[in-house]
Length: 93
Image (cartoon, rainbow, N blue to C red; front, side, top):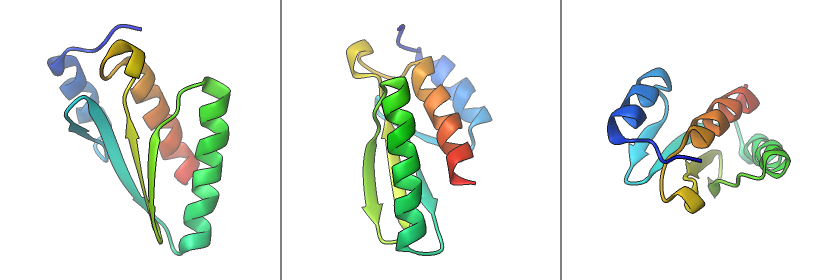
C-alpha cells in the first residue's frame, strides 16, 4: 500500500475531524461512560483489527481509549489507516 503524501493526509483529516495527525501516525481519543464500556470498545476494535490484519496501538486510561494508526510496512500513513479510523468511529457508537 502506498504511503500518503502530507497534503493527502491533511485532506483526509479534514473529513475525519476527530482524528489528528501526529508525525507518521493518526490518532484519536475516544471517551466512554466508564471502564467497562471502554474495554468493550477495545474488544470490538481488536476483533476488527484481526479481521483486516491491521493493528492499532491502543492506550487505555480508565474511560478513555486512544487509538494510533500507521501502516508500518509502508513507513507511514496510508488509506488503510483512514479506513480503519472510519471503522473505529462506527465501533464507538
